[in-house]
Length: 184
Image (cartoon, rainbow, N blue to C red; front, side, top):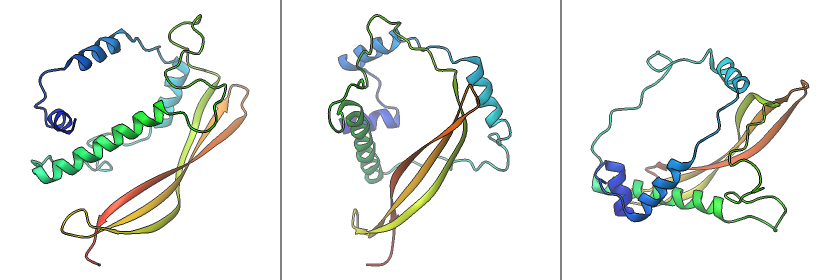
């Protein structure tokens, strides 16, 4: 799996296996529903003043450097863990069984295959704040020590209903950063 992931990452994967061909055929059958015009207008209004690529306010990514075999292995392993984490989040229900549908499960087979987007609610704001940070210790993934830092963010989305009332949805998000260090 890591060999195929690395080949896909560096562009040398040229042939698809039977599972990839089957997945591609299934994906080609899916036709996404069009976004409502009101949602597109709200998104355009919200992003109108943001800087565009090429402006001095946007910092470009550095040019790609050829990856060494050592770096590729770590990036491949990290990508594989991320993919497995995303798949497990979709496939494994959390907590006690409930009446709510599970991702990928048909809610009502008599309805249209593509649900319409709710135009009664529009996003009006978003914020992200760091709520806590902590030092999780030092690890030695290579010849040099690396410090693990845990950062907890609070993300808040403000939504507006058609009647003008608003509500906020707040959700914590945890990220771990691995930083090279010289200390023991």
